[in-house]
Amino acid sequence: MKIILKAWLGIAALSCILSGCMQVDTQEQKLAFGALPLPEYAPIDRYKLALNLEGRRDLVAGDSGILSFSLTNLDTKLVRIPEWYSDDALNIELWCQPWFTEASGPIEELWIPIEYDWKTDLNEEDKAIVSNYYQEPNAPLFRNPLELSPGNKVFINRTLRIVKALKIADDMERRFFVKARLNLSSVNVESPVFVVTVHSAAAEKALHSAKKNR
Image (cartoon, rainbow, N blue to C red; front, side):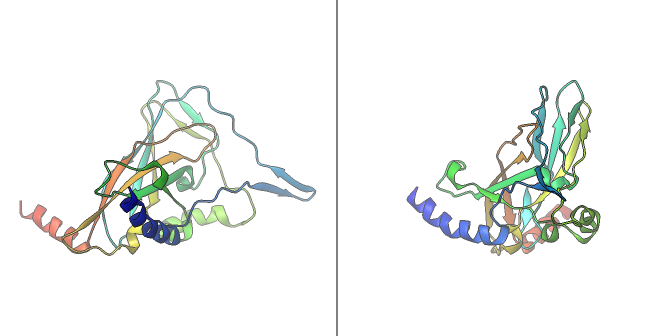
């Protein structure tokens, strides 16, 4: 355990520099006569939602490190979430930690929250869409109700920012545990823990070549 913790200290420091450590601030509506707290969203009485990681779980060092999550309504009735952020990425808190060979699974104390920043995490096309939500820096963030019929799902992308800064030898890979939970008050939903791998661009090229030659 001492070896794990010592190794983790350097990685945790790097991760906090690269991705930021999440801060939760209470937002207020600024009015001419003062400030009022934003409305609180009461817990929904009935819901059955599943938050999962979709698509590829093998990422390429130096790339954006996008992870695609899905939120699925597993109930037999429509669910309505009143506080859904218009900028979809805000609805998810993302957490990660390296997978050490000495550990059989993730260590609860070592989870690092990955902050979301639309200016650095999104591509130019997506920036153009969400920039409208941030024109007034002191205004409350835009929210709209989200309705999911039975069996329907919505996709939310988040960026594992450390992937872009990683440099990995062509014959090596790095593994990370990741998990997510909804950043909402009306529902309490957390994903299972997933493992993602990160390999070099050369390894990715070799992988594609091998697939073509099959």
